[in-house]
Image (tube, rainbow, N blue to C red):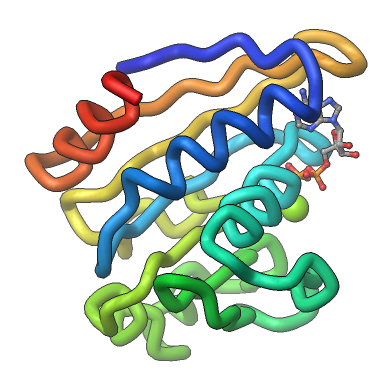
Length: 153
Ligand SMILES: Nc1ncnc2c1ncn2[C@@H]1O[C@H](COP(=O)(O)OP(=O)(O)O)[C@@H](O)[C@H]1O
Ligand SMILES: [Mg+2]
């Protein structure tokens, strides 16, 4: 596990762009944290770092998934409003996991059992108005390799 203390949005953005450079096709990122922790902020910064126009990045609260065309395709999920965790698979989520893009899933703890075994878990927590604790956990060899690349950057 790696822990970062972000002192500002700018620091979160820098971390996101380092992470973006470490991501590879079929990476699944599980974002976990309370409302306002910074999940969407981190997704926006990752997408921008992958070359997506800032204007294209919406909050996916009312649809399950938004797609952005970056250096890698980005699939941005928000499962907050899913009534039933099993709907996640019924809506075809696992096809996205292996489609060559990067899946970024907000509120991923709600669909934990439907995630691929090897995914990168990012837990965010507000520690102050502009400070956030951001913890990365790898759950398999592929996500471990991503964390290793992130650490040497
Ligand atoms: N260091 C920081 N890193 C990320 N976001 C921050 C930071 N400091 C303040 N914020 C603010 O926290 C809020 C996070 O909101 P958002 O990303 O929508 O949260 P979530 O998607 O987890 O509900 C944003 O308004 C953002 O501007
Ligand atoms: Mg959000």
